[in-house]
Length: 220
Image 1 (tube, rainbow, N blue to C red):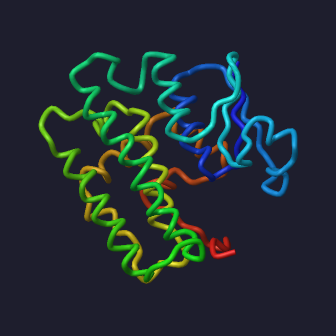
Image 2 (cartoon, rainbow, N blue to C red):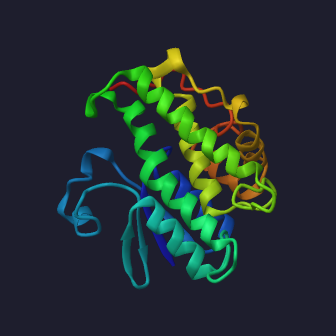
Image 3 (spheres, rainbow, N blue to C red):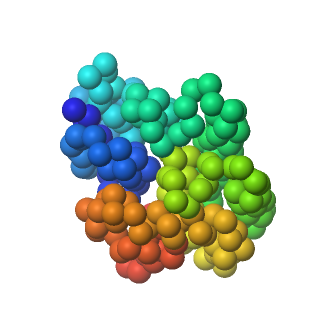
């Protein structure tokens, strides 16, 4: 049985959705953000970051690593190893982890990085445009609305962040500019497994396609 260490509506959301889609037994261990530096948690992840997935073989951390581990272990939510589509899937999975994720985090936490705010927003839009173009390619199933993958789940979580980041409200991401990604996210929201996770984390059904953060201070 897996134990997912995370915080509701943080980076553990993607892992939570993937586990629910896989219909595999797991326990969500909801952490106190102030306790991530505790020795017990550092024993699972020496960086003191979430998510962490405890597996029968030991803990694994880093969002993309966990998602790839789950897809390979369960033979689902990704093209099979050796399949022709695997090459493109891995390319865009790593692009998402190494490029899209950091640029969106830079928007969420502008105090951590240098550069003008609007430049970071423009860079993020260009990266998402690339993903939307990939979704247009004939034969590409990485973002197929009817067949989720760990990549589409990962991107959906990042799109949630990019649409509702307080520091960039003036340059708020308009998801309608990326029609294929929007179709993917809307389809995900209506999947029973994803709907269960959103409800469990106290989020509305449209939390991925049209998130709202009334009353929450994301600038803190």
